[in-house]
Figure 1: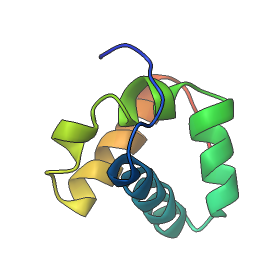
Figure 2 (figure 1 turned 30 degrees about the vertical axis):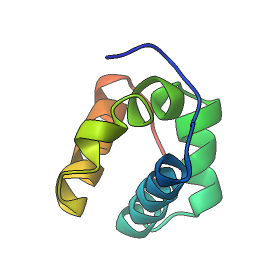
Figure 3 (figure 1 turned 90 degrees about the horizontal axis):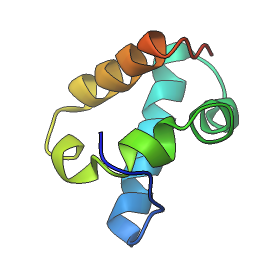
Figure 4 (figure 1 turned 135 degrees about the horizontal axis):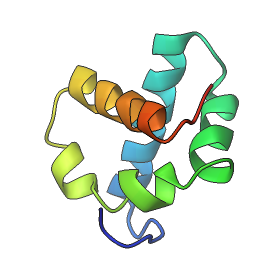
Length: 79
């Protein structure tokens, strides 16, 4: 994993919203809860999703969501 960093462009912001919305839809929970878990209760947003944007955004929606959910499981992060 790359170093933690903040979003630097609108494409990254759009991608983060895409990830949050699709995890929310997949799990049937609110997008605000997903955001809290990814950004506040863990470092998955700034420590993985944003740094790996260049690779992740080229994958399918299913792959991206599965990958993030798998990482959450490995880190013991629950929704």
